Each structure stands twice: as C-alpha cells, then as structure tokens.
Image 1 (cartoon, one colour):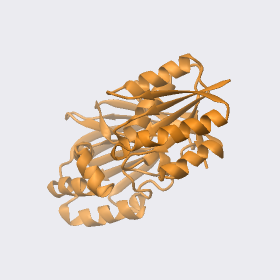
Image 2 (image 1 turned 45 degrees about the vertical axis):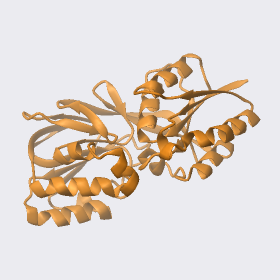
Image 3 (image 1 turned 90 degrees about the vertical axis):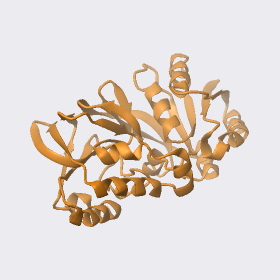
Length: 293
C-alpha cells in the first residue's frame, strides 16, 4: 500500500485548514493510500515532518497551509535521497507557488487535483545553504514587506505588500550592491534587487512574466537609484508586467548570482525574513514533482 502524509497548518486559512482534512483523507484512502496526518505547532515542524516522510519513503505529501508552510515543507524535501510527490492545498493569503503552477486557490477545487492531476517537475532555488521556491529580494522594500502583519495580509491580501512598499519607496533608501552573475558584474546603488523563480511575486502574477517554474533560470531585476518623480512609473511597470522595459531597471537571467554590499542588508526569501548579505543564489533544475492541473 502506498503512503501519504498530510502536513496541516491549523492556523492557516482563517483557521479553516483543518476543516478539509477529513475530505482529503477520504479521497486518499479511496485511492489506496495509507494516510498519516501531521499538524504543525511551531516553526520548522513542517520541515521535520517532511524529512521523516522522505526517510520512511512516503509516496505523497500534501501541504495544507500558506506559503510559509509550503516553504518549510519543500525545504524538508530538498536534500533527501527519496522525494515523494507534492500536492498543494493553498490556504494562505498570497499562495505564490500555487499561482505560478495554476493550482486553484479555492481549496475545494485544489482538492480535486488529488483525484485528477498531472505531475510537473519544477525548479528549486538555493540561497547559501537554504532553499526557496519563489523569490529572493534585497533592499529596504524587501525588508519592509516581511514586516507586514498577518492581520494586514488577511484584511488586504496582496495589496498590503504594495502599501508597505510604497511607504518605503517614498523615502527612497538605496544601498550599494555588487552583483556577480554568470561571468558578468553589476555595481552601483540600488533601490531593490529581485531574483524570481516564478512569475508570481506577492500575489501579483505580472512582475516577472517570463519566469517559468521549470526554465532553470533566475529572473533578476535591479531597480536603480532613482528620484521620487520616477517612482510612479516604476510602480506602474511592476504592476503591469513591464518592469524589465523600464529604463531605470536592469534585467538579466542567470543560473547563479552572488550578491554583496558593504552595508548590512537582510534578504526577503519567499515573503519571510531571510539571510544577511552576502548571499549566493543558484537554480536546482527539475528537482521536485508537483501535482498540477
């Protein structure tokens, strides 16, 4: 009999995640899975549950929660010799990875993928010794965004990030950056650096429109040191998917990137506070298998 583990964050989806457990368990049982239910209680629980499932050679893991739960779950998959297939029931505010894979944001519709789905191999990003699935950002905006409270995200959705970012943009803080990528170098002052693995960032699916989950590339944007008068044009290009066409933005694709600064800068990794600079980024192509429509 095949084995499936459900990793559930009971606080996700306005604490509604647990309401779907029984239905998912029934579907999995009907498909011949022996099912184990693991509920998270604290940080890194999802990673530990996933690592145990890999060691015990489970065939399927279902992540039921938001981007934070999914990020932890995927980090538990990466270094394991045996990696189960991954199913995603998005219960968060933004759900960037699910958006990028066209997984329905309605949990009921996402659950149907357990019955009828395809398997897609997707890339994973590595930042130093940790991993990410959507984005790494550096700059004052990146630091401001991870300070958005859960209450603000629940109330306003992705626009909570926009408002926080606009507040920071108004003060126009820039930082000196050195960026080495695939044998090339960029140096200068920057308002924001973004490295995207997928097209969905903060719930907006047009920021990195060329990014595919399996193209093996980091899609990188450097917003230059600009004055306040140019900010509206930059914001407009971010929201309309034309960021790389803005003359104050440097765009490049790379398989590996090194980022450093003489100033102390903390990254934003998949919407959460990440590591301090310097960092090294690279892509691990086609590393995990995910259930998709």
